[in-house]
Image 1 (cartoon, rainbow, N blue to C red):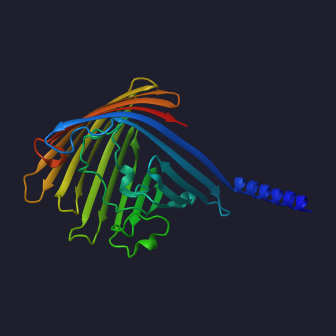
Image 2: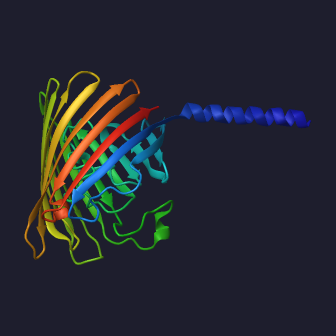
Image 3: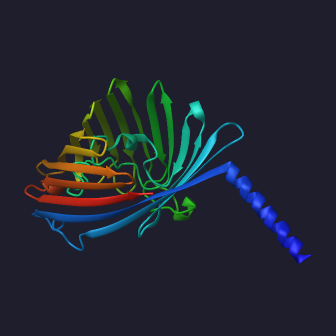
Length: 329
């Protein structure tokens, strides 16, 4: 009798697994990256190299998807990063022509983040590693946002809302963190205008109760691709809601060249006008070069960047060099 019960339970479990597999598809992907980095510069306490220059990072993502009876599709994403555990997760419902709604633990599911870092590059942005982060589009609060994305006439419209910008990182039930305070909302539109030409425009604002100021930001870009050459230009302004600055107006531009199917080279420039409260305005100037060579699932990449007037401080400089070996699986 016990043997029959065991067989019956095994068959039932097998049938349940089969049903689940038919209803939902799950894929696992990831990367492993070895890096060597160096830092240099002058005038600031954070501009010199510290610690071991060798690094090893791993990233694993889980993607699940399935269809509902009404034709809508649902999808789930979760990622694990070396030393940080689960770093992001999202749940989305795709309603076809009616658009897609996403609940995301990060802040890049929609809105102005969809037109961030659009300048073409072979590997990294011009200020990667050497820039201070001034001029970054980051007025979208902390984690856990609701996003809506849809396409109209070839243009992608994306909106994002964060109901609580001042709360700490939320895991699981966000209500356990107490009352949410402040909100953030932003929107963007991007798409093709002609042969090889794409444009984008976005706006966002953030309210907090940590100070008396609210933040606003806008961004725009235009890219053009002809043959192996890609050219990009972007501009925007971040009216910060902290005491550091009144605003950070920036200009990005760059060009990348695909030498062949495996090798790409690029150069980029990033200038941020730092408008300080009660002080002289300063321009943080960054330039960077990148290269990438792909061999199947492996990529060898290199990047060097230099920033003058680092963090809006006249005379401070920072240099950064990175070598990377990336394996994808």
